[in-house]
Image (tube, rainbow, N blue to C red):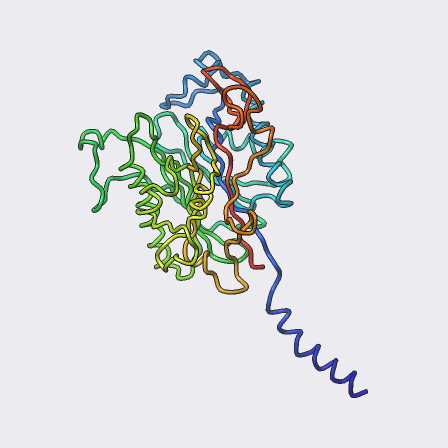
Length: 357
């Protein structure tokens, strides 16, 4: 009888501990450059003429439908690997909200019930960034579109004042809300192009803008967890990410006002999300702040997911990859040499996992 009484008492004592630990949660947070997801209708004021039925790409309803199906297939394949839909998926190179509305109802991914946050931006081609999210995982509190500006005290710009006044690029999207009940903010960016070997100062400013906005959020909401993601048109070792975004390769080196940059070690190990002239790069980057990298025990933190040491995942499958020819082994894109080849994207998607396990 005494033994039964002791066991009963022990159960009573341990019960509050097991309840206080709370349910185990894991979420996938990712980014995907959808490579020119345009519809077939002209948007007033935008230079989208090549993506019209009579435009240079002869962009027909049939091609648009195939593109939507292809993008959905990739998102579904990531679900199949992870056994769960993305909680949050940032996207770039989308023309407008309409193309995302068409995408999220594709049969392959309709069950995810993705919701959309998108703002029309000033890019002359009309390409924007956006955030897809699942409301059962992420509860949105606020969002805003942050314009690019030249208000830097550290960067010397190569553009003249007149050129700066005419410059147009994608806005940066910020969305704040509750992921698994914890305060998070997500930035989605598509930083200025490298065309002509230019724009290093502009991408540096893009990183600086996200960093400044992150500091503001961390001051206003102590303990907030932040993920900045996007097609940075830079590697994680370039100044935009390493200097102006304060990205650190090693998680143990991340200070209170630094960001953990998990794709630095992956780049050095030979991984890549896109290939250019035979060289692999990782432009599709996610970084997280100190409060997510060094989260208190039992709360959501970034976790290693590749070989138990890499904290990022570059997702690719054979169907997303050229299997033969000159570009064998590289992303199977939508167009090649100006011709429609029915591929997916010239970028592989990337993601991280956050978990309280």
